[in-house]
Length: 366
Ligand code: ATP
Image (cartoon, rainbow, N blue to C red):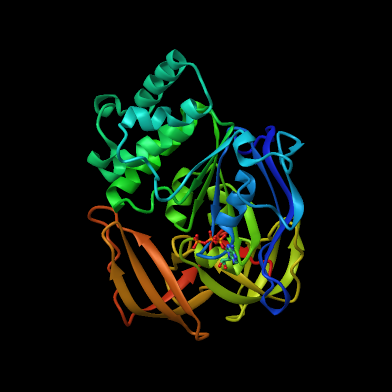
């Protein structure tokens, strides 16, 4: 689904949101455009203050764009107040009613919509089953755990069958283990309901785990949109490569280009092959990014494209990180997986060579 051009559920076109005026004028969103497909699990990922919540609020109708338009299934939603939009939101604070039971909380939105009692009952039962909370239907929400409250908040938001569900950091109050469980649970809920999810998080691991596609945001702009694999393997900008996973950045010079690949010269003098970013034409001095697990140790330091000395070895159970200082003075990390009985025993102080396999290097846009 993610790579097939489906119908767009939401299309955000050139949207800016300006707060304040004069010297205090501040663009929380700066000409943001993004199309979110029907049935997609789409994540807005970025650090605190980059504009994620602002974008969700504009889609929900809690606030209005200063410029630009938002379309829902091809229709401009500007004239629609929040309650007329087929969009629901799950907030970080679940905002449940503590004096009501689980079932009453889930049915609340449907009652507000004036749905008939038997329809509400059937729908609540279905939602209880969906979030696996049938056994606690008659408990007050003040008497259930944080993870269970999260499920109720989800069920309540899904009950009126919105076309789009907005989720603003809904798992951040949960402890690590529960959070991991709920990530899988959310993905299952999205699959089973077929509802388009727009999920906001600043946690890169969470975004990689759940999303069909991710938009990486920084300072009011979307820097890159792609599948988790695209974003991880082909980061287009330094910010994206730095924010998601670990990266080695190497200064280089463009030598030649062939379609979506280039030959670049590293400061060591070695020439390697590297992928080019989409919609960009880098020239002259560039930066190349190499993920630590994509680099390999060469049989010998002599003759390898990069050579250096191991300064620090960090054993992390599943893998080991080798922190190197290259002969050119740059830092470099190599990550090796530890197979049982085959851990890499290179030690600090050793001189090593490094190979950058074809496809492991990516030229950055900026
Ligand atoms: P977080 O992860 O911390 O929630 P975020 O990416 O969701 O961050 P936003 O809440 O969208 O960020 O805020 C983006 C920027 O806009 C921030 O610098 C914030 O201070 C500013 N901002 C948000 N709402 C307002 C407002 N009503 N008036 C003025 N500035 C605002």
